[in-house]
Length: 370
Figure 1 (cartoon, one colour):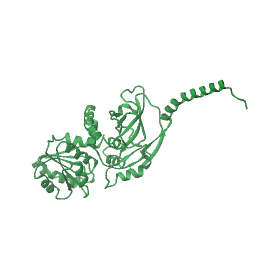
Figure 2 (tube, helix red, strand yellow; figure 1 turned 30 degrees about the horizontal axis):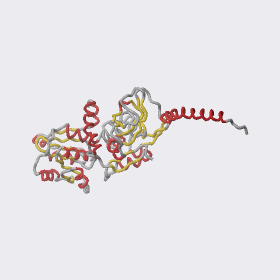
Figure 3 (cartoon, helix red, strand yellow; figure 1 turned 60 degrees about the vertical axis):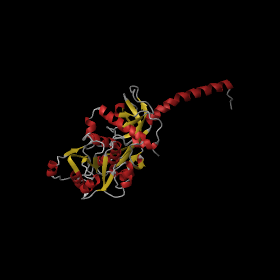
Figure 4 (cartoon, helix red, strand yellow; figure 1 turned 45 degrees about the vertical axis):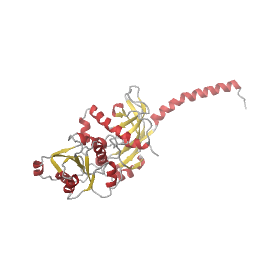
C-alpha cells in the first residue's frame, strides 16, 4: 500500500472540508424544494370520510413575491364539512383542498418579500390552496403576519390557528348589528359550539349578559366557567324560561345557528325592536315565522355569513378586528375547547370525529405531527 505524505494528506482534508461547506447550503435549499409535501384533496362531493384522499407532490421552488410556509395547525370547521358534502353556499371547484384558516411558520421567502421573515408565524387565510396540507407555497400577500410574541407553546399555537373564522364571527355578530350596552341581555343557540364559547367570553368582557341555549344536558358547568350568565335547555317553553331568567328585562339580540323551531323560539323571546341574526342551520330545517309577531314587535331579521363579510371588508377593517382578537387569545382571555388532534394520514378519523355530536371541543389537524 502506498503511503500518503503528511502535507498531501492535509491538502486533501482541506479540499474535502471546503467541498463539505459548499454543499451544506446547497443541501438546505434542495431540502426545501426537493422534499415532498402532503395535502388533502377531494375530487367529488360526498361524505367527507369517503371522498377525502391523502396525496403527495414535490415541493416546488418559489416564484417572485412568494413564500414557503410550514403548516402547524388547522381546525376542522362545520363549514368545511358542509362544503365537502355539497351543503354549503359556495360549491368548490374540483379537485379541491379543504381548509379556510390555520397557522404556519415561514420557511423561505423570495427576494422581493420584505415584510415576512424566515421563522415568523403567520395566519393562513385559505385562498386557492386550502390549508389542509403540510406546506403552502403562495404569494406573501395571502398570509397575515403575526407580531413577535416570544416563545409560544403548542397549546397557544393551536388556539391561534382558529383566529380567522369563529372568533371573528362572534366579534362581528356582537358589534355589527346592535349597539349593545353594559347590562343588556342577549340570547344564543348552539352555545356549546366554538362560536358560542367565543360569544360568551367576549360578551362577559363587555358586561353584556348572556342566555345560552343548548340541546342536551351536561353542558352547564363548562359554559358557566366561560362566563355564561344563564344556561337553558331548548324546548317548547323556551321563550317563557328566557323571560323568567331575565326577570322580564328585554332580549336585545338573538344569535341562531340551529334554525327550525329554535329560530322561532328565539324570535318569540325578543323584546320590542329586537334583532335576530341567523348564521347557521345545524338542524337542517327551515322556519315559518309569524309575520304578525315581526310587525307588532318590530323585529329585525338578519343573516350573517363570514365569507361575504371578508369579500366586502376593507383590509383595515380586517386588521382592526384581528387587533382586538389576537391579544385576547395570547393573554388567554379568549379560547376554545379542543377535543382532539390528528395528522394528515388520519384524515378519515379526523373528519368522522369532527362530524360527531357530543364532542368536547374543536378537532384540529396538525399536518407535520408524527
